[in-house]
Image 1 (cartoon, one colour):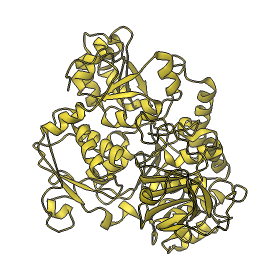
Image 2 (image 1 turned 90 degrees about the horizontal axis):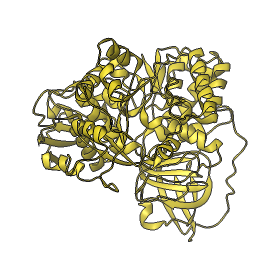
Image 3 (image 1 turned 180 degrees about the vertical axis):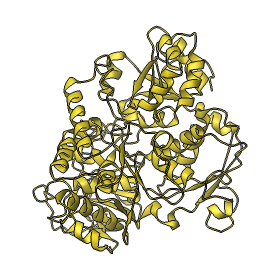
Image 4 (image 1 turned 135 degrees about the vertical axis):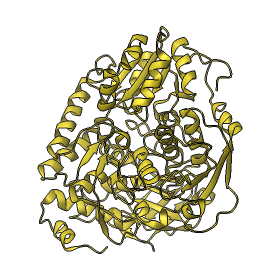
Length: 419
Length: 165
């Protein structure tokens, strides 16, 4: 790899041991992918919470802090695993809560902004066309690459931290033009895509069709201008089911003025995949549960925007969560503060919905134990991502449209043939 | 063959762990698979061959090392000390920390062998100093079975089948 004088100096340890370790690690990752050089970034976003760090990860962060590692570009944090106001009620482990506080303090000591949100692209920072960033989780990456035309690979916690500490990333993958070209065309003209869950279902169909980080679908036939929340649910599902980091939508996304342009100038053949209403219905029909009872409904993964919270607030107004059921909404501090001020939270709280701040449901500390203690078996959500990602905790999951999710929340049952 | 990144003595991101514990033998391979690229030292171990992709977040109980996602084709299997073959990576940003965590808990695999991986798996494996490779000239699912004994040489870019189960 060709290094600049400054990078050679970092690698020699002139900027301290924390920087030296960070750039050495980045060079190893870059070498794996055949990167030729490092490129500067303007912004980083990292995952770092005790549920995924474990004791080893916390020790690593403390060591990096002691070695003088500090962010040299702004870096924000993803959703975490504990909302301290809810920890006791949710039966989360006090020892792990104490460690989570240590994680937060350690990150802050390295000048990391602990924003605790997985929708930074909606609430905190919107990079422009061609801007290089180092983001994770995957939902943030695919939104940055696709909707903003910014450039990032999936940067896991240690990689995003290293990027912030050195101010650069190795140039491979989606930092390079050649990986950003569309690789297959999907025609969705026959799908109405009315609800956020429909967009997630579309993401599942495309993601499962071609499960590869380097597959870039070009989605054509969109009937109307999609909203940011719709593209969010689509992107999160593509990243979750397909491990995909980018999509094009001609006329909508900035690197796709046309299908041909999205494909790098070559005229595409016939669509590789056609998705219509029947295919979307097929997704809803694919879930198997033990019976109609459904005692857990989750609106999370990704955190909700203010617009999503407003809609839920309207749907829950004057209703009550069924006795014996649990319903969760998660979002960021910023969104929840605004929702409270605007009066959107009161109807949710009066209905018995738990509104958690700064967390995402699937990463909650002690989730498996929580599931057992509450006797939760079936989880219903309008997020295609969360019904996929939560599997290791042994939930039976069901994707349903938003209005159906609210019905399930207030009745404790999945309606027959609900789609 | 391919690009190789070696964990070097002074390159460790985590404070360096004590030397490799691979227990490499000198047997002659029954067959060899060529790899596209890899990281890490030579290791040997029992193969765990998956028909399905993998994510430590989606599929793995990160306290026991068991694959627990209902319906995963390897549900109930342990990845501990295995050479794990997965056609694809799923998701997921968690691997970056999770591989280091499972290594510290003593439930890490010997190596990850992917058909197509994503950067998170690579970033996580390098942090944890677990060998990882990507790409193969022959699908392992056709020639290697769970329980077979294999050697992984990321630098030479080869998997060698040493013993049948």
